[in-house]
Length: 433
Image (cartoon, rainbow, N blue to C red):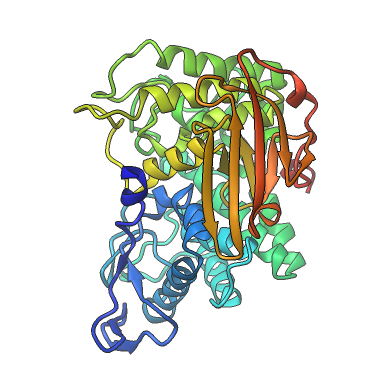
């Protein structure tokens, strides 16, 4: 319940008495579409808070997406981290792209998705005008020229990975809107993240404009070439393309071993008071990493490490959270993971894990979704899953399978099960677009 409270604090409803708000053009406008919101911490919240609001607060979620579109109308661009009626340019990437795409793909309508897409493409293809308070995608011309952001040009390596993720979300929205050419172009750009991968070292490395990787290279060096993290943290950020990532590593087994090392080394640190150079739950780029095991055919490891995070990263202690909640992001992670499914932002896919509670109910707009986990909380491995009385042979579900309500039943076991190892993958594969 504390986590649910935290997910309701931001974004902020700035609608004033009489149904008006102060826009990014510094003019007063009627909030004739509903409530006007600002204070979006999108670098954080696109990952799980906004997907959660799609489920439990669809009307407010629609108003938030329309507010983002209004900001682009009145200020010129979709925001990165707006505060009140100003662009702050805090954090990196253009993750309004992802929140808007995620909402539209899941059936949230009533906002101008066509206009949103047009604004996304504009920011993704050209610099913002000099002197404008919004900085857009810094280094975008270099990104389009080299297909990565050169380290000697001053932009962080991690921004290449972020631009690629945002390009993937643009492609997803363009595809949904029937814009085939735009979708094809941005699916292609969604693979640019690969251009910073050094197979000799097994990391996404700073790369100069001459094509050479920058040396010396220290994977544990924090914050120099990577936004709020190190090379280990940013190794897992582009999880929309597990097939492409596994190929970079040299195969799924190698990637599973590296991911296991990532969590294993993190588990040696017993306190949340200081950042961890390996898995650091307070750092958004690797917050989803435990779910990548399921994409690689090892859902048992997803279940193991998700429960480890629940049990060690959330407590009523001075270091009870690994950092701050980032406007409900860490709380949204906990809510999803405790319920037994977690979103892949920018898609309609949720990956399954063992629920924390024997029973839970989500009150959805079209009916209740009842979740029952036989064996919870003591048993942490999934033996079988039924959705509305029908067994499913996969470790993921789609949004349209649960949005009208129903019943999701887990049978849990004490030991890892191998039923998910043959789980079919979702029918989007970026590497084959």
